[in-house]
Image (tube, rainbow, N blue to C red; front, side):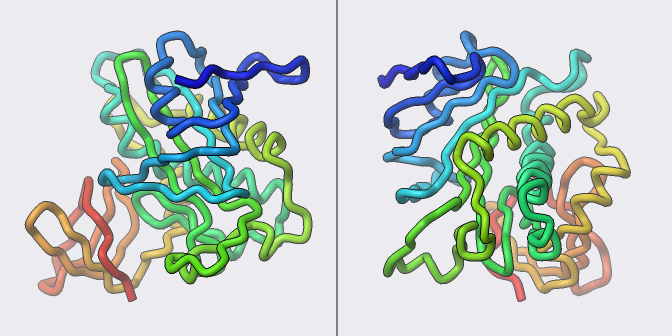
Length: 258
């Protein structure tokens, strides 16, 4: 397993790896030894992971970093698993707020796609993978910072920050800002019952890519089709079904939206 490579200019919370299969895997394996707010970063991730066991392709120019957070509330009613559900959404909001700090003109084009993606100008900019362990949570972020997609088949739905922003921040600048935003959001975490504050619900729903769209979700063997209605108090996604009822989904794979 690769070891972190410190330099004299590194802050003590940053652990840079020359290469590794997955920053999330490394962070989870070392979580007991990493402090709250630690960041694991590499420019060469060879076997990244996404939701549902999917691989995460990380060509040159993708920022790949994992952020370690301790359980967000000391109350025993609040578990790390419960926190992971809404933390993907809060992490998406953190990505947006970080990018807005560098370029306010991006703001109207940045959206959150439940449960774990950030889209820019109608294409995918970043993916988020939250994993839990006995020693805390790891928030993995893969963000297309300065990527040449070439002829990749999946490139038509992806976008790189440099394609729309005239001044692209460096890896270190982005990591530092993302860390700051994530720590701020973690400090005002949901209640022990797992309820999001109205402030965060509004902020996330204002960025909702799926709002008022016809969405198809696969949940186990069930296919669910409805109109996107935004997130609820616990980070579940609400769909208005054809019979007029509203169903809140805690998990599921988005198959399509229109």
